[in-house]
Image (cartoon, rainbow, N blue to C red; front, side, top):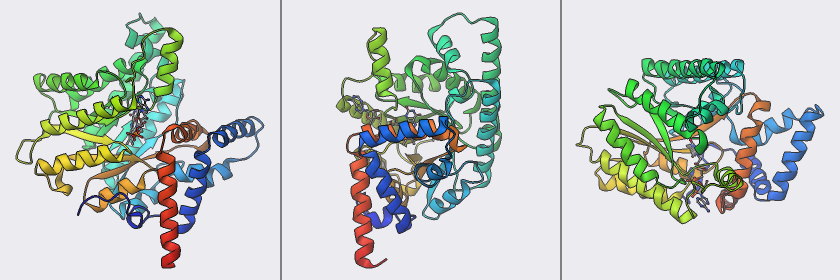
Length: 397
Ligand SMILES: Cc1cc2nc3c(=O)[nH]c(=O)nc-3n(C[C@H](O)[C@H](O)[C@H](O)COP(=O)(O)OP(=O)(O)OC[C@H]3O[C@@H](n4cnc5c(N)ncnc54)[C@H](O)[C@@H]3O)c2cc1C
């Protein structure tokens, strides 16, 4: 059956009409940048005046984009999606931790997600951000080769220890784990951590996955270099390919500090790099007869790139449900891609953010701003939701 991302009866199978109506209003607001700005302002004011708005947030944007406040809270969404073979990747979305206590709490939550993945077939992978475990300022110092003070060194060692405990735990339970990519000025430290993790834990299976952001110039060459390095050093390479989430921040920092932006000159160039990277990894993965060597996760809401990956796999001789590739989208978005992929047998998962409501707010703002700025995405969501609501009305579902 060919992939049809317009089949809304499959796309929204897991959603009641009431929840679709809620999504419709949320995406309508997200389509208006002025409303997003006002909403953000009002939320900040309400929090600073201690006006209790948690319930309102919980029932609206939080419900749209998050699984729950804890791992256990998120189990409902996990099973709701898994009923239709869409898996979940629990993402502890508390951003901007700055003290050791916060880092320890993050580590605890990530370990909990690994334990859940071990025991729940609807959770095949785990994920974390290095900035949840080490200060971003320290990652920046390490990335730029600056000397570390004695205190810096102590918190660096502690951060590396936290990360190694997470990776060792994932390895001991055989749960693959992805390391998210972040801003370019901290990424070389993150890449080093990921490479060392792969060297240690990717001997037999791909446990550790790093992320490549194709909106940066030169990522295909980097990918080739990484793969060559893994072959020489005899470990298995795991990669999540994404376009990249920090474009505005990257561009404005480079402008302010007077260096050349690392971002591709246009969306066309990003798309080209992303698709070339997919083709390259799939070429290395090769046909089903070849020995498994690389793990790939395609993290995108882009329909063309998804179809390109699916077609390439077919041309290589893979059955949909046997292909050694995960497709992943964010929870609350692009159900037309996720549920139709899963319905065709592809391994498909949703990043499912969770965390205490107040601390997940920065993540929700990022999601809102991204939806507002990614041209066409919100419009696509809205028109598909409307199409499905109309279909249900006509069929009296
Ligand atoms: C499962 C999953 C995991 C993710 N993990 C990460 C991660 O670890 N790190 C991370 O940074 N992001 C991550 N993202 C977010 C991702 O990088 C994108 O921001 C988001 O998915 C939008 O890109 P797209 O491929 O879905 O689709 P599209 O809507 O086709 O592409 C939008 C993207 O194209 C790029 N772009 C847009 N305009 C231009 C321009 N003028 N010039 C150059 N490039 C442009 C930007 O990257 C923008 O986000 C993840 C996304 C998913 C679905």
